[in-house]
Amino acid sequence: MQQIINFIIRYKNFLLYVFLMMVSLGFTIQSHSYHQSRFFNSSNWLTGNILDTSNDVSSYFGLDKENEKLMQENEYLRKLLFNKEERIDSTALDSVFLTYTISTGKVIKNSFADPRNYITIDKGRNDSVEPDMGVITSKGILGIIENTSNNFATVQSILNEKSNINAKIKNTDHFGSLVWDMKRFNVVQLVDIPRLVPLTIGDTIVTGGMSSIFPENIPIGTIRKFDLNTSKSFYNIDVALFNDMTNIKNVYIIKNNYRKEILELEKQTETNGQ
Image 1 (cartoon, rainbow, N blue to C red):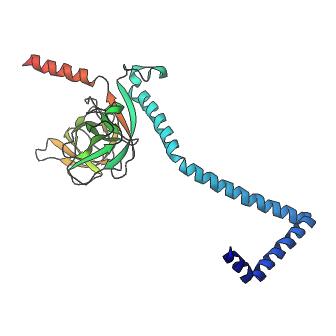
Image 2: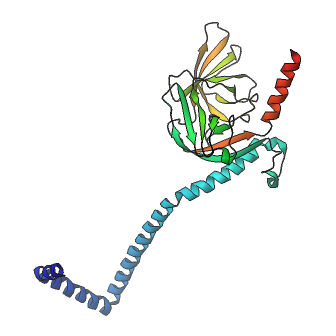
Image 3: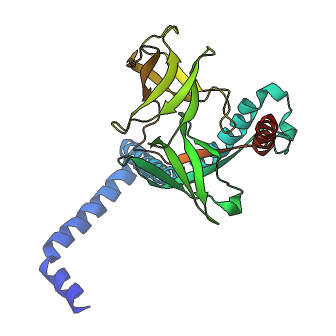
């Protein structure tokens, strides 16, 4: 309290000046309609800017909720896309009879500079996430679930020396294997494409139809360069990824509901053929 009194005594002349100026301004504004108009217009402008700034701040802190809504909407749309050949209606999208079901998750850890890179996501067994489920982003393929705990899962990234995924040249039936040579985090390789296949720099590479993990035609990247291998029979193709593997946050987890049945049938066929 004493400090306030000392402050007032020290700056009494300045405070008196401010007080008298405010009083004079008040009398001036009240006595002239022009000044009243200018004052209220200025007040409205200031109030409007304050409210606009407040709204921008509120919108910023609400982005997480908006992103969550967008992820849910994209999940719904991807269910439609991956199951479009089944001609289902929207009321059946949660049915176990769908070939593919989709769920969302977020990345909590990501490596991209090691020979065997992994990504950790915030979904696990409690969310019905299992090994050998596919993981993608809105831009393209990311990897395959390898291990799960109750609440988390690790994804074998396509930037992993063990990764081997069926892929093809878009709008063709020419298939190969997608691998990684461990050199660059934005480029992978498509191998086993015969030399007779016509290739063009910039051609799009997508997932193939021979995978029991990923739906067909999920984007991967574009052809950056290609040449023939030492045997001159197959191409070595560098594929520039659509995904920025250093900056990943939201993911989609894909389950093929018929994968177990397919694998059991193939195993039975191999056993009977021996």
